Image 1 (cartoon, rainbow, N blue to C red):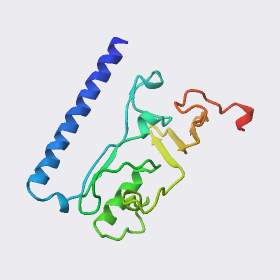
Image 2 (cartoon, rainbow, N blue to C red; image 1 turned 60 degrees about the horizontal axis):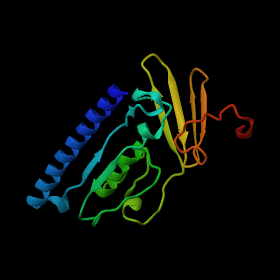
Image 3 (cartoon, rainbow, N blue to C red; image 1 turned 30 degrees about the vertical axis):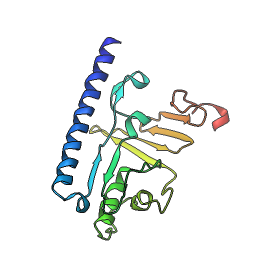
Length: 182
């Protein structure tokens, strides 16, 4: 337990350092008069198990501590003030968002949906689910489909996990084998 706590302290200290550095960047843009004409996006590709679900590091099956990541956008010319949006989005939505903010049409080969309508308050949601995929160099594959109600996971070894997120928001009880969920 002491090692887990120390690991969390180090991780949170690193996150705080990144926050401080981001603040320096934003202040420099403000002071240089460039904030209104600059889109700043902070995000990451995954979270961390910090003892959550008895695990450390990262990986599947796609619990919130891994897949619910920050996506912070600052663009004063189009986004006045602070706003929080609680919606299901995917990493593939980031590129269409940047392209729309820049006034560039999304090429057909680009996946995802622009988040600009969400950010600007013109829409309240753009998708009902998120697809999470993981592939290893050895050929193992796994995927999860996550909605506000459930999270279903399956892998190339035939393992299945189903969480009823309404009854079990912390995703602790696998009901995949429960006949009520068949």
